[in-house]
Image (tube, rainbow, N blue to C red; front, side):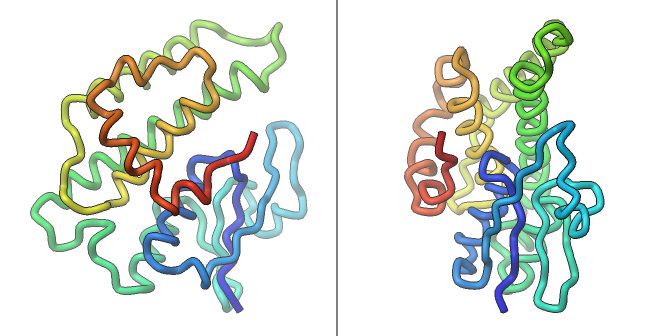
Length: 204
């Protein structure tokens, strides 16, 4: 019985796990189940899997459920004995984990901005809040634009950064990150062309 990964195709966090599982050679061991999770529309069936109704969640063979993308990714890496993804034993391990956290937080900010602009009713939107979210994202882009993740190997930080760059490109019509972070573009494009990224790209 394969592992079951519950996630929304549009979720950058579920996509990060999906990409990581493929890069770890677990494509045949992880069954992806699309799980709709929308604000104000409680998915009670999924709540039986994850009480918080957040994605992603990973159900193991024995029924144990692991939640939160960083925990799931670490579990999958340990499952196959991989040390590369989380840079275990590498001198730059803490830099990888720092960049992973930074990229993940950028994804959280982007999702919050998306909800504010496209989910919240127009008469309840807070423009100053959205501007603050986008300002933080741009600061993060500025950071990565000057500290490129050149480690000579694919790490969880690379995946976690490339995914929100894709998310920003596809979800924000006026997103200008390609112009604001030009040095990231030649780094991002080869990653975005990898089979694991192509096969997990949301449609629509």
